[in-house]
View 1 (cartoon, rainbow, N blue to C red):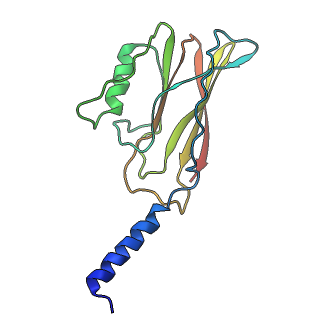
View 2: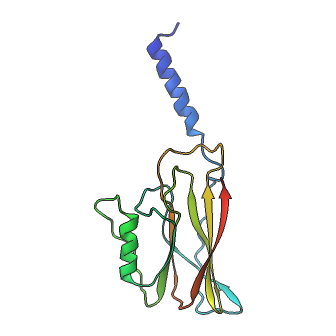
View 3: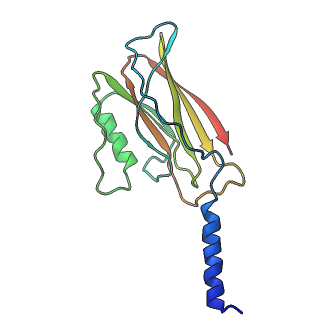
Length: 176
């Protein structure tokens, strides 16, 4: 017969090993980004624009408590975003350097979420003759997903070639 302490240790080990295999649906490995040339101007009615991801966070608690969609075209606005993102981080790390003469930054924030399992992604940026269209995918955990009980503030930030056009955001949602 096993001693109670040994039984407790074996039970804890079995639970820990079982939890390693638990992950939410849709958490498959992300495809690698393929470098593409940045088009200099729209070719026909639209041109997909290459958008290298500057910084992308999902399961993080930042100072971004409300949903926001931002187009950033100067250093001052970029610094405000850095302060929000790293609100709970001390000391605040250096942030990206952007040449605002040639580039701009698009940032989307999901706001404060009650658990892990939420994410927001900029899926595509398309330039039309009269506007720039940013396609966003938001994910919420589905019922039954195993998620961490932690407050998160998902966001995605990308850098694109600077254009002086109206920017529109299209949203798609999955899960929950």
